[in-house]
Image 1 (tube, each protein chain N blue to C red):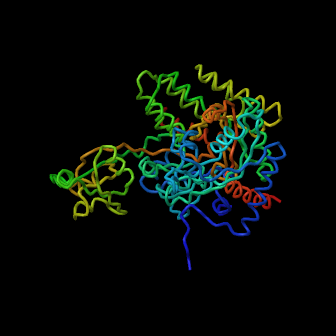
Image 2: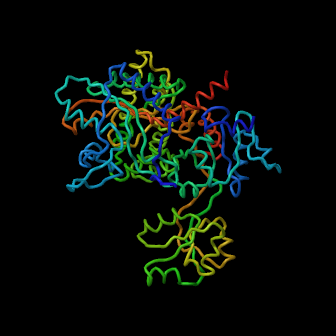
Image 3: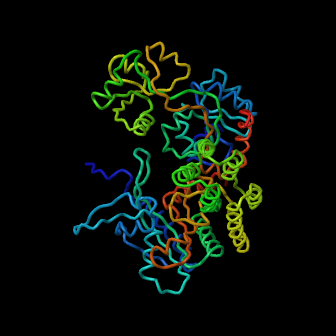
Length: 331
Length: 226
């Protein structure tokens, strides 16, 4: 007899579980080796606490009342719960703090798309270490994690979350128009971006072209020069931040698999400064991401800069299988 | 080799670049655009029933226009060409829209029967009109954004039929020349949006195959003179 489970959730059977467990252990070993202590937090939190971390979007897709009438929510990532944990349990600890996790998170899904409501994330949070060195350390840990998973061809995109916010402020684009332009940039709808910017008052053809061209710049450190040639104070500041991070990575010998990407824009509201995205040639989907969130901890009473990343465990597992079969073919 | 390119394992951002080519109304002009970009399309113009054509450093995969976002989102095709109407209807597909190719121009419109006030009357007296369409999400968004309530009825075939035999009060459909509307005694009541062919890319391919994607984008852009 078939007893259904909700769409977007799944059971894991022994063959898969064995492989996932191996991957879990490999990743946590990498994190622990580098001084990141593993923590766990409840899957259910007070909605108010999660919303404090990310006021821009609804923090959770799943909210419900408990027996006392309090509004609870399922976490949608681990960064906000860990910010809450640090604010509560480590407020007086000597920074930097190094924490890691392997936990399930929950997100809304679009129907009929095979998306998961519940998914596992493995990641680290480095709290109290500012840019650029803090960011460089996080990228280094990420690279070690990818290597441990056997994804030595994976590539890390490095961008800047403040670039377009500041650029649009410089151009005088505010309010709804600004949000709409950022949305076009995040989804990389270049046709819509161009049309939308062209309609705004006070924005000339040259500035429209700059915005579009900027979002297409990706590659090695040479793209920073190309970006600067497009001009503007916002671009100048963002490229300087990226360059600092990139140089810190070079000094650690960790820049080889990092591609600078000025078109990068992550949709989580709490990022500031450096942002990261992870790709593997074996998979058409993003494997994970992260970046800096220097303003987030402040909302939980601890004014510390922070950075981190999260890998989608199931996607890493798929890429791992693909890379293995590719290596078999090559032999 | 072609079977391997298409069939082995998951979608991959490696090997020759895979381009999704829409069959149907956009087919000829897509091939012209690709020819102008230096991609040989002679094989596709023949009588071949094949779906996959290998060229010099590129693989052309032919499919229904409405499948293009699906293949490109998953990375089964790295880049593709399809209509804006398809992208609007499938706006939840995460593909990068890189270029307006300018051809295949048509309009998404609301149409009703000529000289028939049923559409307005249904809205006024019943508070709700019935709209048949192949683009339910575009239609819903249009009426929602203009503050009107409608019942959207999705049909798969000739949508012009619906108001003629009483399934719906009006239709939302794509119009190129307007001849089909004319022949079925229908007329345009509202323009919703203009649509043209677009060049789209997979998110990972756009990052990991930047040089190839940018080169192809530049060649396609050259032709439309911008």
